Each structure stands twice: as structure tokens, then as C-alpha cells.
Image (cartoon, rainbow, N blue to C red; front, side, top):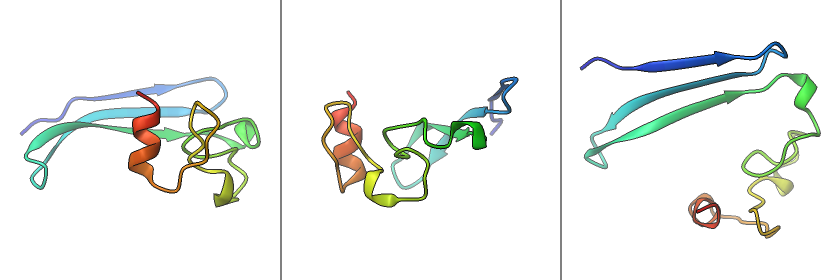
Length: 79
């Protein structure tokens, strides 16, 4: 099976890699996205990775401002 992969690199060094993979467990394809920020983004992010300050207590903050403990509930809040 061939894999299609896209890689976007910004001048800041931020890289986003996306590819389609197949999960035998889920028996379907899914989109795998890897977000690789640089130190420039430290303290300037929010959401899934919090504010990128190595403090897990501010990770998984939904768009409604609610703090989630479960990644599935967090993902549902972003729909």
C-alpha cells in the first residue's frame, strides 16, 4: 500500500506533516497529522497541547474554554 504524505515547512521552522494511514484495529483509514512547532511558539498556543509550557494541567482546553481530561471529549468539543 502506498502512502501519500504532505509536508509543509514555514520560515519560522514550524513543520506540519500529514499522511493517510490505515488502522487494522478500527478497520478504516485515518488522517495522521504531526505538528512540530519551534521554541518561537512556546507560550503562544492553546488547545490540544495547551500553551506549550510543559504543564499538562492546561492541555486539552476546548474552544469553549472548558478543560477536558479525556482526549475523546476534547475532540468532540472541537466539532
